[in-house]
Image (cartoon, rainbow over all chains, first blue to last red; front, top):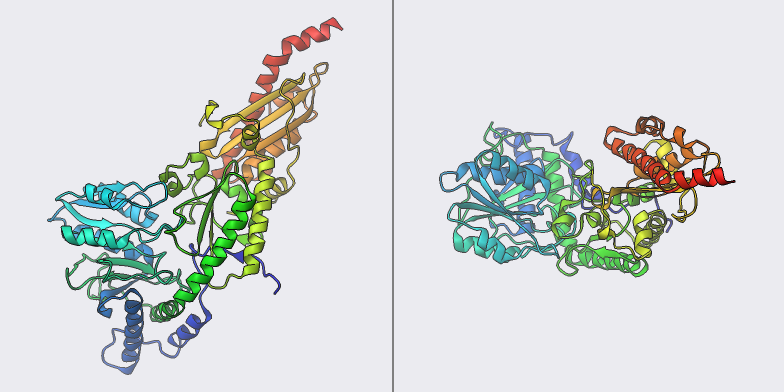
Length: 408
Length: 137
């Protein structure tokens, strides 16, 4: 099959809608346009029924006991904001301490920073060089003022999958609410809010082949019953936790996307894992001083993150961006000039943090695409190394760290 | 962020990539930036010790496309200039030529620093000896 350009391999920033998702959504724009909160006529009943069905599909994917525990939001960022700020405000009397990790996505970190300015104390637990949090470190960070533990399920840059069940168990023992940002894990690997002791769980549709503009926060109703202060006031929709008219077509698409993910997950994750390994082997087998970031085993099957020493990430992307969409750092931070804080948190040198490239595969990638991307990446890295003063110094045997650089 | 056509051209077809032996007579080397900041430029000039004219220039850069383009452009401009003229190249000239956006202005600053460092290195290494060599012939 002929390759079609550009090739999209940036599926941890977003994914294309599955055509089956779009088909499910279409009737809800013109024909079935009712407001799900209109209780007194068939238009409203039809919309409410569609929303309930979608809610049930998402509940099933994450094994929530009751679909009512799924609260729709505008996306992952809002779900994370609602979880953190909602708990902080509701449980302030109980305590003012939050435990999270250094590698949360910006929605988590920046919300915590705002809470710090409002008088909360936040502990950012470091990660090990493989990107995994040591559960003991979480345990040690807890105080009698801790009201929330928030640890991401799988990382957006390096794909590292945390031991969520162990953290959930710890949270239960201590009677502390546990939130996980599962935007990257949902629909890709098995998640189970019951078995894993998760009280709050954030996810988004656009990373599981659904539409942009809708996400969800799972809020546990029993053992314990978690209460949240809403961030958006209004008509009291979504059990009072998130007012606002639901975007029915998006919600329906989210439900269908969740349903498809549940159905294809075993086969799809195995296929993407094989493609990813192939990409990884091709690149690491041909490029010297290329380093895999994150744990080689406990990571998302569609994620690959490599630092190419002596070349800067953005320049690698520039060499590829006509034909291939990849990312350096994460899409949220690449508008700034800061290197990846996730790679830096692994203890890598700042130079390697500037050199990281993320490949993330999706449902529609093919073997041919993987082979092509591997080949082009290798070519571009070699070309850039030929013009890298650092590579030249390294080849001359100079230790780059021994040079007195004048940092600006 | 979209790159200007000139940046893309310099990135795809960098001028004067390479290195001179540092101790070759007339060669001045500037190495500026820092790996942890994501930008390092090595810029070298080869000056005719008789005339004071830069006969050749080479660069190697670790950095983004705009950093590569800034240093590539600098080597192009340096060739044929006298050492004094070269000292007058300003980062703003590079910004204007490459149409660099505000977030990439530091790349042009680094290129100007690299030019200055290469000129200074040339002067410390060769000016006295150069003058002596010129007067002895």
